[in-house]
Length: 332
Image (tube, rainbow, N blue to C red):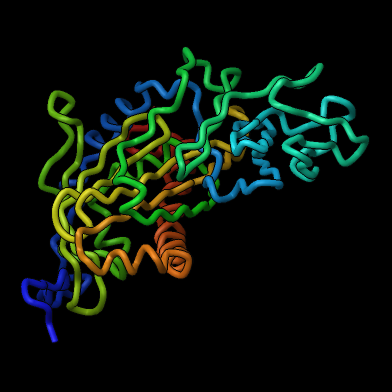
């Protein structure tokens, strides 16, 4: 029996053949995408890079990742705070991400050298930040910008009223190719017909008025069943794109796409990690049950995100390939 006042977010939309959609190639002007990308690249990031999900750094176990060609290791101290630094032991170069954490110290498994937040000769810690969903590390020698004391974390729904999931995938491209993909909302219903339908871009970026895309789109649940929403896309920095639901089911939920370079800037075949955080919320009463079931829901959300990114990494990798040949519109 339907509860009084309850309204389903699902709508039955007119069936539309893939080839019967309104073409979007005229609207998806390369100069609009490239201009938005250029403005994003000029915004400061303060040398902060997203490394991983907060859950990937549990107490007692280190986490390692290469960022822009530099090995990074981090672990939690006994108070739960983070310590990060170079991933190679200063003694003889052992991979510290394979070493154990003992009483909040990282103990090299080759010769027993202990490392703490105070550093050691030849081993200087990096600033690290845990925002509760993602872990960031500041690499001043890589970013080359004036450093910021903390990363510019996008505004999110309150943690007590949301469910967060983080998905990481890796592709052969540069961070700008990942962000360019997200700054092209017109491809959604064409390239991902299994996920999106009835997509219309209703606002294009205006540097004087928010510099955002606004789209109306329906998340597909079946041939006709879908959940329509209105969402914005903004690029607050050179390696971050934020999608925020403005109206409809899950209003104020966000999807943060962070592009972290893995290889050195001069690498012949660059590799980039896409670390995508979904922070979902809802005012519906049943969302409390969804929060309670979040350990079961997270694998499903990660699977859906990974499917989308299999396609979108193909887009980003193709863009990088053509850009390197000088064949991509807007390439320099």
